[in-house]
Image (cartoon, rainbow, N blue to C red; front, side, top):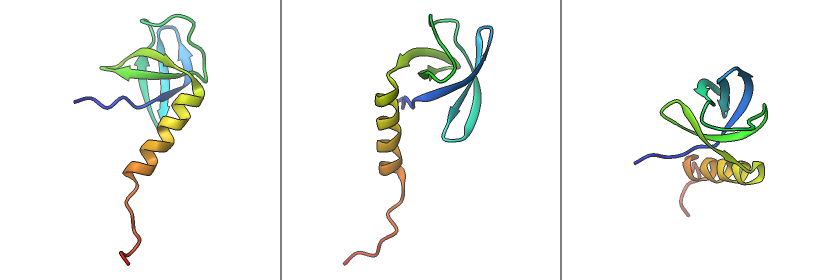
Length: 77
């Protein structure tokens, strides 16, 4: 199973981009996509950006993931 997490492009140098996922930065190839710019959100698989996302959708997806994966620290009633 693969979980696709929206990644924000913070810089581009040729066919290589630096992407950010909640403060974790990695390199990814953008050679498979056209018209990619700094600030765009993409899905990365095996080191390649394979799909560009709408920003609103990407931000909503990231928030939903945070909500799901944040531990509930409240005591049961």
